[in-house]
Amino acid sequence: MSRLATFVAVVLFAFVTLMSITAASQDDSRNQRLKRELYRVVVDKSITDRPALVTTWQKYGELKAKWRTELFYAEFPKEKKYRYTFKEELECRAFLADQWSIIRKQNVRFTDKYLDNLVKAKNSRYFREYVYSNFRKGSWHIDGDKLFLDEYKKWQKKHLKGPKKEPHIKLEKIKLAEW
Image (cartoon, rainbow, N blue to C red):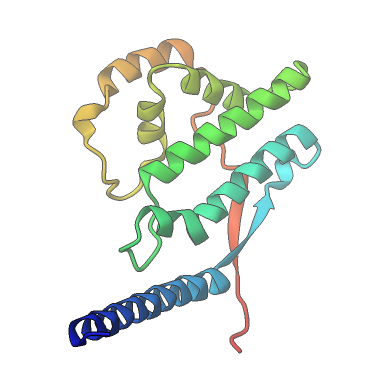
């Protein structure tokens, strides 16, 4: 083997080894975060006598917990700390509407004003505006010019009657002992 070929092989080996170590340390820090941040979904007592609602809200809560522990960091890999985002709420509310639609198709007797309105909003062209208007906290990184808020307000008055927000779950952080 020539000197040049040996040199190239050594440099290539060093590069691959360095990249593997870097990737492993990033995975370790991400895994550490995943191991320490766990949440329990607590369903509001006001709906415990309505299994369809409990199921729907429980699934929503599980997705919210997954956003806090995994999906946020996958979506924003440079972020060190979780923060509530428009994308999270948009995805979670769409999931909630879809879950309720599935349950309603199975049994049309199940009703809930908030969830029925949520499905209406999701099926409209104003779902992004609905989420932005009703759930925005702090500074969401979204271009407000891409939202049709004035049109949405007119549509909302005409089509959505009843509660605007119904948080039937809360997430409780589970504290784990450090080893």
